[in-house]
Length: 478
Image (cartoon, rainbow, N blue to C red; front, side, top):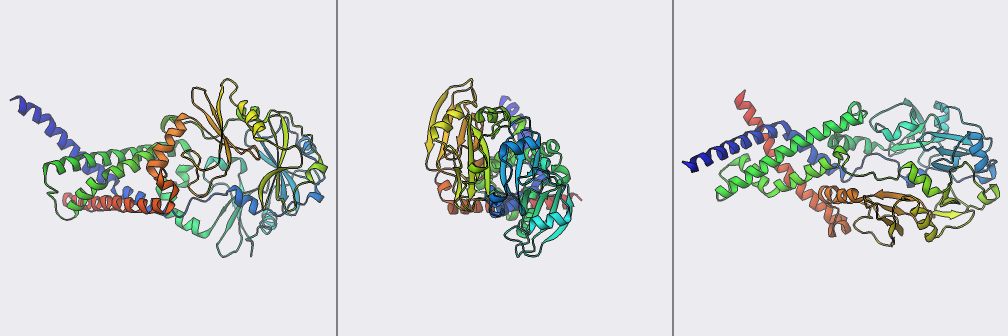
């Protein structure tokens, strides 16, 4: 009698688990297929973005002979009450300009020759600026853009609206220039625009009207992927139970493929979906990846809009420099020149790793510096999936409750990133589980891509056979 009572709830649980998996699978089967296909596309074509190397590569050599304003005078002309978050001297077409990013993200540009602000960019001005790009062939202004598929995220808000300009090159390159400053904020190619519809746009559910509302988009992705995760978990559990009851599989045809592939690769599907769900940072579980404004101000050690180095110092920059980044680090004025040979300090007092570490200590005044480590080779927490990371770097580890680390460039003093204990956990929960970027696979990209391809094919077999079974079920019910 007691055995029968125990068997009843178990049988009902299995029945509900079976029904839940069936209808969750029908609801999300096509989504799984789309995720696996789009994930494979994303391995080869990333979402359009302007890298720092691309930005610098688009700049013409800096004409220091045409610069008439020193940095301090430029800040005075701009009416700055404090030193900006970023101050760069670079060309704006044929004229040198100071590009200013304030602490709140607001951007402006003033002429380094006249001290005047530039007028809003029109079609003719955008074409003139785009014509200086190395890839420019037959420049055509494509009109104004406030927000589109490739500039949908909030990171572009300070630079809106844009002028979109086609360069007429073989790659179909299009530039997005800020109307307010003329700054190049994004470039896209024809291949990126086409393939991303089958890649990131599908994978991330990155539709412009939805993604423009960041909170709503996050909720939608979390709920959709959460429901998909429930379907994957229920299927994996059912597959294991059935396998333990039968020698191999009691099914035939697509049902057999679905069962056997699900047992073999169900854990992979669950892992992919779970790690993707966690990448949305539900409820802010994972800490920020960048220092806040207070940390940056403490690191600079100088808040007033002053800078002691004048034009004579700036003109010592190496020939061919395309940009001069002007900053304070630990109360020391620093100018870093970007050019064909990379980025290096110039034009004034040098910067030592000891000075960088000393400035870094100020970012967390209430915590002790536990270690300062010079990283000369990629490791589990300093790496780049898209190429070789910057080396060497300086890692500062603090003993604060969050276990904060900072990575700094010892040559230029640039703050490269910030990570805490939760961020390092996310490195394993997302990068290791979702992109397999860990252990030996991290050192052999070809092996990693091959394994992802194999596992994605297994996932496609599971989801594709499930779609067929779901379609047959719906047809029978109809």
